[in-house]
Image 1 (cartoon, helix red, strand yellow):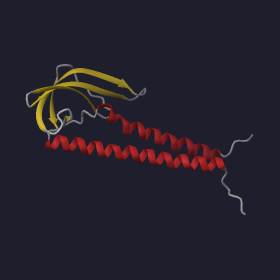
Image 2: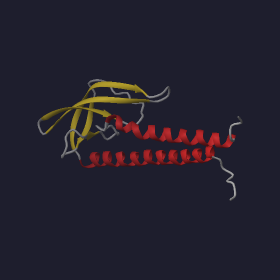
Image 3: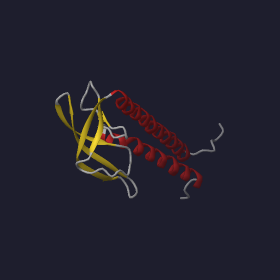
Image 4: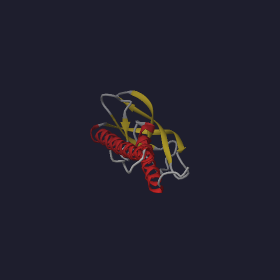
Amino acid sequence: MAESPFGRREVKLVLVVILGTLVVGGGMLLTARLNEAIDERVRVGTETTGQVVHVERFKISRSFAATRLTVDYTFEGVRYRERFSSELDESGFRVGELLDVRVDRTDPTRAATPDGYATEDLLLQAPTILEVLGALMIVISLALIRTGPRRD
């Protein structure tokens, strides 16, 4: 039986690269699905006006932050207060600012703004986190494969 040029370590690292690729792909697929749902809501949702009542910024890393808005809006005579978030951004919303809000007729707690804020809230950060995590898995594994086996 011929001996494989790859050791257990290399095989494990290749599997991590494959897993990292799947994680990146999952993040990209989630981005596409969320964007599609939000775009559809903006296109066919019932238009109303919302007012920003609270603004929070979440520091995800030194260079990335996410903005979460709490917005009051009325749909069919019922007042809603929902949290809206967007993908990583550098917006400058202020308390009291009015927003164009499009509400899902079947579930008024689901709403979006034409500039990409939606009640999916922090779920909108998940694709970026998955993509970065997957990319790190790939880069670290490839670097470890390239450096060769450890000398004991």
